[in-house]
Image (tube, rainbow, N blue to C red; front, side, top):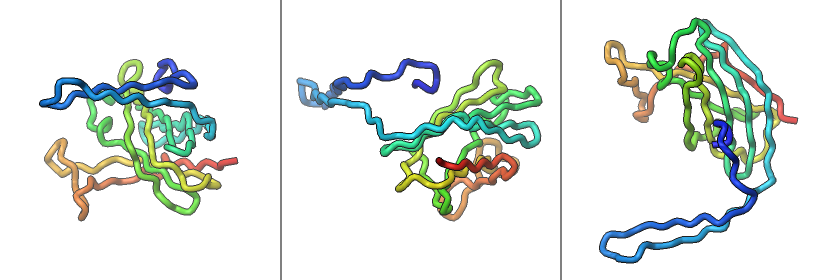
Length: 175
């Protein structure tokens, strides 16, 4: 939660997991030692692109051996609200290396700041196999079925169809 203003974890700590299983009286206890890894690279490009009423900004990218994290921000420049629009649930970002290989999204979260016209996203992807020369971020929207609000169009793999927004695409060099 450090990208959301929360406190970062300490450098080293023990994580304790307690879980119960039906039919067994004592809970299972698992102690996991956690140690911070310093093998990562952080970029803070603060690069923006604009298209129609959307300003897309890449705030931070963190490359680690475990994940590739990005923090982005979208601003609706016409003062409309993400909370009143299906846009908030339909926007995503694909990440590619310099060879065109797409990273798989692990998970992410987004939240609206201020009055609802700003959406910040913190997304976690699988790591790159090797540090690429460039990273390309391609924002997209998921496509809805016509006359069926909230129902995505699906491709041959039953995945939501997407449409990239080339005007918002950002390619960043990695030094």
